[in-house]
Image (tube, rainbow, N blue to C red; front, side, top):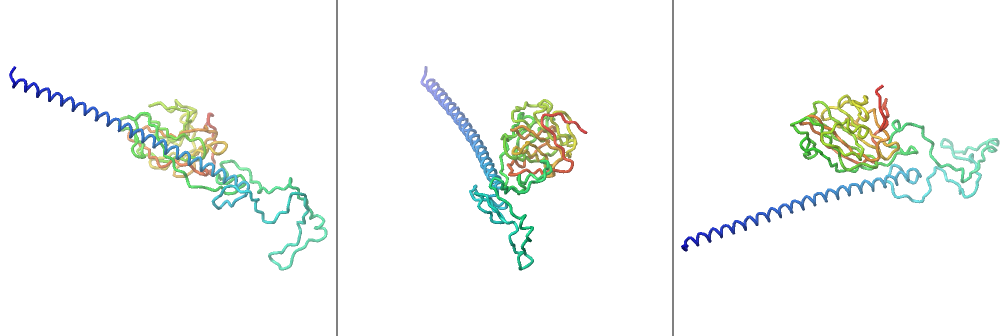
Length: 361
């Protein structure tokens, strides 16, 4: 074999070696790139978890603060109009000084008092004096406020305590809602909007994390590009939705408020009439109160409370929406923890119980 042939073969081998080295470097680059991508995804998920845990801790702190504030209001230790401080052992403030009630005392309720209209004092006659002596027994002294008139939870304001005093309110605590989209061919998340695919009219059920299990929580947003129907509501936290499932498949486990005629759907379909139907771009809110008994859920259209509401809801729920129409969308506005309920009751309001069959009258 000539030297020129050997040189040619050597060059071919060198080129092959360089090609193999380049391929090896390329594969290493792809592996490192995938590892970096996995690391970024891990850190993003870990960051989202930390944010969620932080939000939950803030909620728990706020709930404990509110419980302490309401406890102070019930014992009369603070002024309801001011920001409340931790409990202190001071006695409730009275308009008139109280005697030492360690033992029985006798006081004259007609002791001379100065009239605001006259300079002289007013003194009772002999007969009044004989009937004016009362005994103070420590076990009989009642410093409670006057009892309030019995009213249903819907008729009385949720912003008053058991003694009729205003409950101290705090700014809402914002929570980051995380949508669980089962079939990304039907729905997808873009920013704060959930968009239905333009290629079909499949039912798209989207449930939101985190699970709500305490306090008062409000979920709010609006639908757009709806041509027939859409829904907002709550689902028992134990439910695992299937892609392209029907609403009736989860009968008794979900509660939905339909845009068509304002039906509330739970055990039967189309459901109970009475709430307003809603249209594109109207603000729709769903508010659950798990701090009261019974636990309840109310709906609002453009901040107007709707007449039908549901009680005895599950102790842990997720908020949910349903989209049907192609190109339809739902815009998430907020998920927030409230210090008191927005529901104050409306005329002709009706209460329905979770898990029961409802009939239109």
